[in-house]
Length: 360
Image 1 (tube, rainbow, N blue to C red):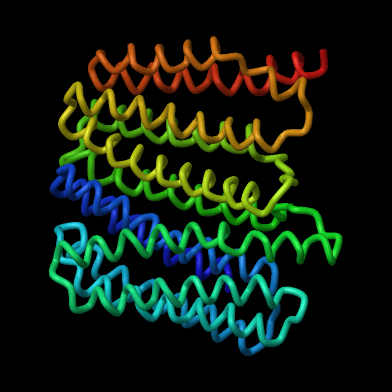
Image 2: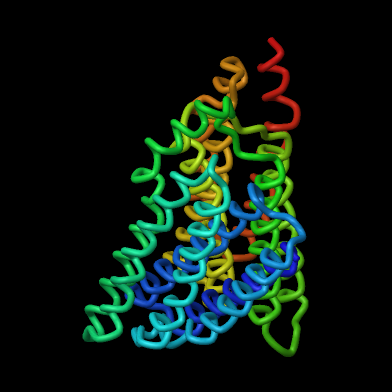
């Protein structure tokens, strides 16, 4: 059921990506970014709930199916919202918020251990719901402000609930961990995002297919595969234990940020293949580097091995970033080939150089 629920977000990613590719502008980019984090707040909140409280009860089966339907319905209105018409998407966000309020109030009622923190979660989300309802009667600009405000409230809820969470963890002697199963869910969603990049390549290759187009298509798929390899090289053996709930949530936000960077990387890869403009090539290089840097950042802040944390010096990232920017001045075919080679060197660095330094 959790896997089936995850797959609806491949639709969300596709509609966000296609909405940007069809008619890119900075207002549309900002709209799509806000929508991404709104939808994926819903995903990571539901995923966190099921990781901590999930079982095969009728109630949980009902919750995940309702949430799947609500996310799918809201995805219908992504193109309108990217274009600046927020009315329908705002209406669709109301039941998504309401469902999660109900979920946390249910936990607060039936689970004395998690009750105080769960009620804090539900109370903050209730305030966000009130704002959404007010937004239904606001003008267009006001609707966007409401969507942005509720997005911030939904993400910052951990700061309001942190005192209760700390008492809960101290009373139960639980460590502040991000479970391996939830890390796996973030990895799966990242792979879904990378899969959506490949889907977009089929539209970018053009018809009829030329030998040059086929070559660029293959090199682009290789590039996506190499990003995947780096992801599992860096995060595959990750175990997260932090000092507070806020730190754990910050790591979860970084996973979402990496999925966001991957989505935008796919958008600009399509632009490069279709239009081959310098600005787009520079953005492609920057977003690829940003994704790799976020992966490393997750590894670094969660590692308890000081030697391993110090293996990637700033010089390595300066070289990596400079190389990616330099190849952006090449023709798109040569650029993608060079990015493949750079990514291969990054993999070799993580696979052979870093472990040796960590052991030393």
